[in-house]
Image (cartoon, rainbow, N blue to C red; front, side, top):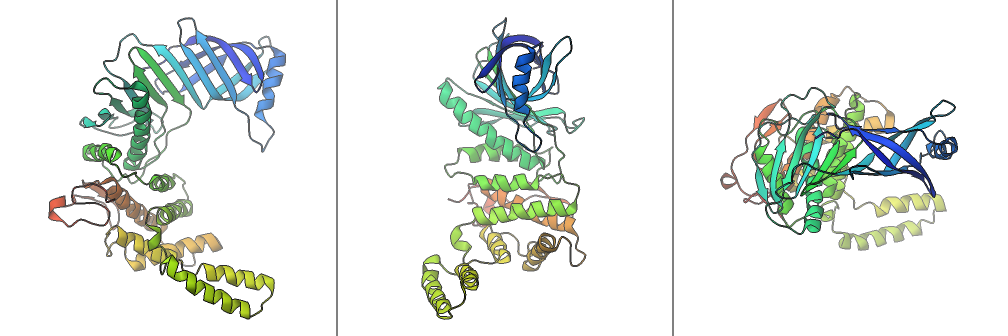
Length: 431
């Protein structure tokens, strides 16, 4: 649904200052919201211009709100002043909204409450409808989006029966966020969302988001076979054990379309370190249990105190002694691999040490000490994280593998293999 051009009467606000304003709002097939302000008093423009800030400083968000003659309402508290025309026949301001909500009546009444999140350049085929606790889920998209910026693809959730609308909308919003993150992972890149729809009865609430589309790379799920993964996502949302949010943060680090190999590789290593520090149990990141180390640390600190060093050297050595119980990064990654039961042949100790050496070279010297293929190392890290995401989701279907050459992997059924540390034979994540 596109938003036809409408004239709104309302106000634009900066802090305690409010100025009456008429403005037009519309959106096209690209899902972008356009705002055109009508002439404004010159003194009001001068007051608003202060929101642009000085070079090198933060700009200030404005509030824009209004209503049209047919009852449609507009509200945004993230409006940015892009420029102003002063001294011409029509003094006016140019504004954009990072996020804006438009509420209006539809010509048809929805049978049940519905929420829908749109994407840019999302590829999909004919995915089956999935039923979960909140209702029916449908994910769609284009097989060949014309550009990275095309408004293509969506996830829809519709309630199955009469529900407490406030509770349902809250949970539905959380579900859309979860699906957004999961589908971005499957897509192999950041998924910009231009609009979210909430339709209850004949009321349509459209929330528009500014932004652009992004490139995708090394999608772990083929767009022609997303059905099993979508089913796993919906099932995982209903599972009592919370999904580790920092794992989605790590996936976000991977979605970097920087053209420099070094930049992308360092981002992938940041993603891996995020997983290491936040996903595996803390007890697996120390050399010995923390309780046992307390006595060792006390004896070492006592021995250091007997050396009677100057204050600065003593503080440096004291800091190093306190961190002695931490495993090295390579040991933590090896522990991560073993915790999830991943292949020691593919993710060998030797390969892990090599990616860390490459990371250290770039971070500490700005260059590689020897020629190393950073692309294959980036692929190595992405696959390691992808397999961990699969296990945490309880996904056991086919996936695209890129380590040591491209292929589609069809894992054996749960009944044909023992349960790993990350997932039960039933396909549910282990508590």
